Length: 350
Ligand code: FES
Ligand SMILES: [Fe+2]
Image (cartoon, rainbow, N blue to C red; front, side, top):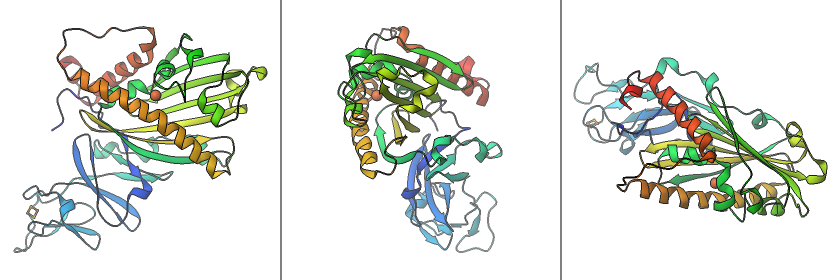
């Protein structure tokens, strides 16, 4: 059962993994505290609850029999739809002998899994970004980073441009942005937080990638699609161009995408990737961006894990809130609304 105080949103397409993580053998994952076993049949990825309905052995400890999965304890066998097709030692199949199958869908090299009510699973709702299918942009998949942190804290970090000056001083931020105000607004279930730093020193990232030496205009737009997907649009352009926001794609623009998969109350997998509009045929440019982001995200990991450890300790203080928290505040409000929609009594309980 999920921890009562962790508000998981179930009716949502989560990332189960990059397509390359799945083959004919079993892959296991824990998502929203549910253990899941996944494998490919005829190219499609099937996902089952990793628990035999007989005596609860994880099915991933069994084996494949064609497209079916056979439990490693007493041999109950389940077809790719989750129905039991064999009970060794008897001819009849008890009606309760089935395993939960989770809807999956593969798009843009990502396997998505629906954790909510089956009837509501619509692949049209899966996150998309036009640049992912645009040949003028190059996409690179990064890592599956494991944070020992609740997903809400990870999400806060992903709609928070203010931290980059302090957490990422050599890569994504520098002192010129410390006191630039952030603007936060809500668009449906998306939080948008942004800021522009005009005519400042380039950050380390755009010195290393982009080659800027003179002053630049630099932007950060954080789009947090609740509950678990963040798109960070950041870039730089020669300050002499004085680009207005709507023409920022004329500069060097990168989208860093984060797909958060909540594992349990204190663990989140952050699968990240990036998309760029320059040097798109140069694989080494993609690798360089990955290396720079890897440094930055390790810095986030250290911060978020320390925050989680501290939060778990007793305290008689309420956290102080300041102006830069506006994005996170909007996000938490959206989560409360989504939760109330799924479980009508949840908001009152909170
Ligand atoms: S536990 Fe799976 S068949 Fe008995
Ligand atoms: Fe960060």
